[in-house]
Image (tube, rainbow over all chains, first blue to last red; front, side, top):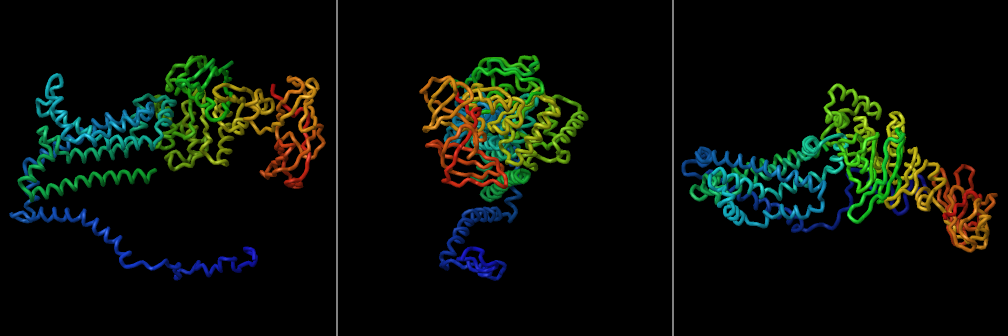
Length: 291
Length: 349
């Protein structure tokens, strides 16, 4: 019998429409072989173990922060009231913002120019930006101290000039994140065509960068900036060896001497990091919806 | 009076020569297409006019001014890209007004000009829309309006329809030509699509391997190709290997059958030549003077035409027949005869 030979009749090899269960919500499709209890349990076991791996230390830290001998909230009151905490916090914030500026000023024009005019250099630039992953922080800080502790580049004489060196070092540490964020942003917007379109309409380089490229890299720049900020807030090695009174050395000091306050401070830092990541996610999602 | 001239323009990227000795004079208001396969140098030539590439040698002038070494921003050319290149952070009105804003045009003038161009492209209600809210065809219209907003001396279009589907491409093609005629703007159009070039242009520049093969009207390019390349690139072509029998009388022989061309043949008697014929100039089982017997090998129904491939002594000839309701479609394997007039034959020198 050919298909459709009998109007409304069965289709050869397929049975009736009713037989397919179409339009009958109560009818379940045929089930596969039954799964064993163990088979059903093991995905859940992984979820539970994974959750415990992340949640247990947090719960422990929260409990620790509430066990101060002077009362449940004492660790929090003491850490928030610590006279060294807020200057260290403020200094870390300022360092973070300055690092973002240095990083953007170095990375954005470089990545833009490489994408537009020197695409062959991309692998070399990528390799250079990855170096902070390869060079340990302690090696970097000793190299910096050695280089900037003698003329003609004597920059470690004062606290503020050392801070400047540290900010530049932080900018270097942020390169892997910042470069990738900016590079991904540039790849997503067809830089060449946008630049050429703006040029043909009479725009010079400053106009192109400020009115065309930067606004279209907004999400990438914010992502890179927030990651940089998170790195600066938590960086210890360089700050310690450069004798900088930032949040991480303050925290290390607290951990050594005041374990309950340290737990509270850890949670504050944790919240700040998540806040940064949350902001990245929020901004990215909003931009994604717009697109 | 010529408006845009390219004189002996050459462009080399290292050892590789992209464009060689390119000379062309474009009249004001003329629509000229650069046609050729990928890598023939057509886009490179356009980019040299736009200022995005610097010629290795030669000279480019626009409205009497030497622009060979001027920056793109100083040339007064409007460019439309294949990828639209609309600024994603700006709405349609801001995109169109960008060039005017860069030139510090007063706001009222900008909004007037933007409104005028939105009317011209038929999208007056889309002023506040962002590029991601528009279809490909609408985006390309906006790109065209943006390029026209600055009242450029010349409009350059780099394969503007390549990213669009066939129906939209057709509509937009007509739209571009209508706007170009209305504004009388000198236009250079780059395409690899011969139909597009033939339908749009006043003149077509056919390019191959960086050099100009022929410059002419679409009619001349198609019917009187200057080179073997032009003949084979523009339109379909049949090639029949044949031996010259009578050079002065234009008689050749293939597979034991003689046929005549309407001009003398420059090659000597006994030489093997290639006779070139357009599929639409051939007929099946007709009354034309030249007839070659063969067998129908394939029949493709293409709507307005029926394409029949006939095997003539081992050579496959394509014959295009106009479709009509009363047409009897040839059957595969059916013996037939391919006829053509002497004037349809072209033997390259």
